[in-house]
Length: 282
Ligand SMILES: [Zn+2]
Image (cartoon, rainbow, N blue to C red; front, side):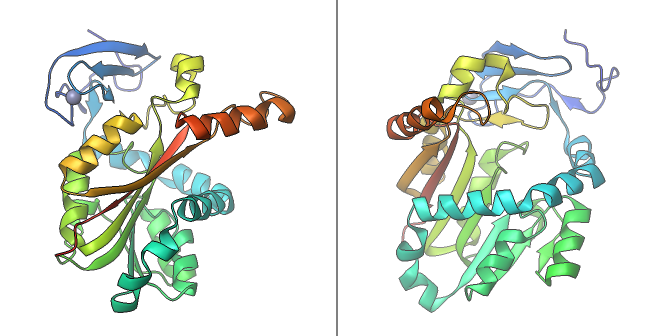
């Protein structure tokens, strides 16, 4: 049995089956210092096993995490805006927006994207498990952010036209619950944007366990195919998807990095992926 340097008693860890398909058939993929990723032999999800429980996980999103979010928020905002452009969200949501300009960001951190969307005329709300980040977004930006796990935020059914989540689904214990809850609170015809690392991309293939997304805070690492399946199985219609990122910044000169990045994008094996899905209109 694995031992954990962070928590030798393992009292805050669960030996639960694949969080997507429930299978207990798994194979060790990457054995890291104090945690490990296994591959589900039935649905191919890479998941951390054993997994910290919610209490242990929530405790990780503390002051240190808040500092990290603040330091990087301009960079994160620019990446999120780029991905929304990439999937053409603005044009696709035009009709629905004129009826109900409601935008929810799940895992919204300090509310940097929400502030941007609010400036564009959206009525915005956020959910964030890190108390410091939620406080900052509320007090400095005046954004309505609920400090809670998404499924405990008790939003009314069919209350949003767009739900956005960037680098969120890889951090949570139960991704299926997330997609079901997103479906419930979206208006018919509403859009779901999901951005997360691509476990079937170029980088994990090359770097293996040294891949920058094989970190202790990531519970689930999806392939593009696997993510599309979960989203479809939750009732959504897939609209479009993109991947981006080939060679990590600083690891190769630009004349090599740029064409590799373009090729990864063209082949759908970029390091990060975004999937746009729609709840069927009634
Ligand atoms: Zn599975």
